[in-house]
Image (cartoon, rainbow, N blue to C red):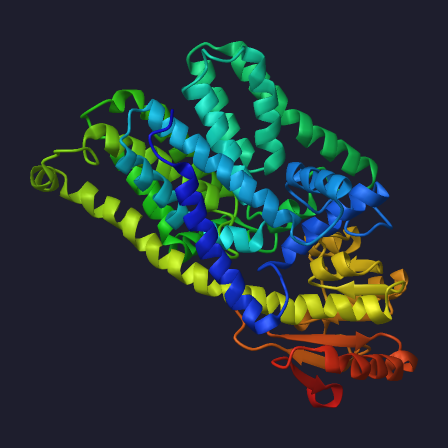
Length: 517
């Protein structure tokens, strides 16, 4: 029996999140998410559910998503209940309820009081932070839920479940996000250090299965073994950012400077191992596995982009950290705080930074998340609806492809390479230049391009119109350009844009092509 009503924290979370959605709704008059990637996942799920195609569009395969489990869950929900825009949010709310319930159950097992359990759950709410993850409603809350669940299964409940349950646990951990391989690999090493060879093999086999299935199927379709989003974005694989050891080290310094909360979490986890009071000796596997997972992610993966990539790390770090300080007496009743402060001043300073510095990040994320919803609606959703109305069966090239893929059935070409192999190869071969981009687009029969930035500044591409949003928080550029690759179809594009203009939100600024050129 749980000592603390978990539903109370869940309701608090939903109230705060609803307020953010409401602030955005006041400006847009419609429901939307804070990420274009959310629409990528919804488009993939829709095509899988209703067209049996794993891809951005129903027309061809594309290896774009690094969370096959979330895509399959969303596709299953679409197939059973029908496709609608609220489904990712509902799945995330259920995943959040599962996460809160699991953590509260662990707190109960560890003998925490109701007050300590409340602090544990409140820390998750603030430090991940949860509301902005619901604004985007990607797979990150489900990832955290599964990451905590697998650790709990191995470290807390190994004697209560048969050993074969490690195989599905590994399957879930790797398939929810590929970063799960960091945690899973470290758990295997810990199991083998205790001579539990079969346990480690079962967990590892479960992790390899989804990666191998999707990887070999992707290769059979002419794609990379890993999803393009990992091949192009991960620092360790992006030759344009880390083409040398010096470039890799500079990328690490940049990450450390840009995301100090992640570095503070790593330092706090390292120092908390020195606490000797209470039951800390039993807590060390949590500390070391989470600590080394955080370091592995720092070295090989990304942070940032609306606070989401490091969210599971902040959640895991808080659980491991709070469990240890509660076990040491720091968070217990009747503890002599003044004496502990004098003896452990450096640790207290870092612990305080861990707890309080991300609070600013939580408030910032809430404000930015609400604005990001408006940004996505005013830029990506509008381009998607424009394509659906006028180019629904045409070949369209774009950089931000999520909303276009979700709202339309066009033959979509991803200029950034996440959903298109031609452009992914151009990037990896360091040939991503205007002339090569133009050549590929003409070979593929692109009629319209919706893009921004220098890579598409090809003289043969004519900007017919641009849309600019205000107070940009999440979009790569505040201005998106509409290009006609065929000069003879420029007039038609201008006519279509003029016809669509009354449907644009009032805050979107329209810039005529001759002013941009």
